[in-house]
Length: 152
Length: 123
Image (cartoon, rainbow over all chains, first blue to last red; front, side, top):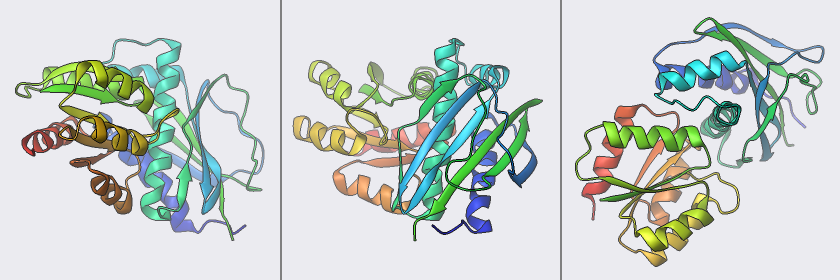
């Protein structure tokens, strides 16, 4: 499988920035972007979208509950249950995954998001070194992990 | 106009509901919320919506299949696709299926309102 090019990985940085700008009108701060060399410590709420078709792998959005509560409150949502926080992180992963098609093409297939509660850690499954984006939004940290490759 | 919202995300269903109910859109009433295409068909049979916001990536029955079935049941229904699949070919494909409009996620409240107004005017 071919590794992604820099521009292809950058699309996820642009996508996560755009998500917060459009939905909350509060720009996030991208604090780092790097290739992971070890398993990662994630946050409590994780949304995972799996890629297939022209690419293989997944994107993981990992966020703490406080960020998700504030995100929901800003949108006028009053249900701040665990279920709704999981739903929110799943929808963010869905948005980043779906938006990737604009750059990577319509042969990229995306799954329905899987949502997981618990900071069990993030292990690379496709790339030796997944691409990690860390950010801060409204003083809260978050992480996006891109573990994907182009099919040859 | 009777509105049905179809999306597997509660956050999106809630948000679209609030935009519609608080946004001053004329003559629109929410008649149902569906989590997937199969549920949308079941709700539509009893509520007969005139406008539908439709996600594409959903479990059980996706938006593409749902659009096809919905238009067979209600040929005049106005469908606005609201999807994270923001590539042009998806938008074109949705319109070819019979959707009247397309809004890419993430969307602002104003973008959604304008798209709904556009779709409601097309008959």
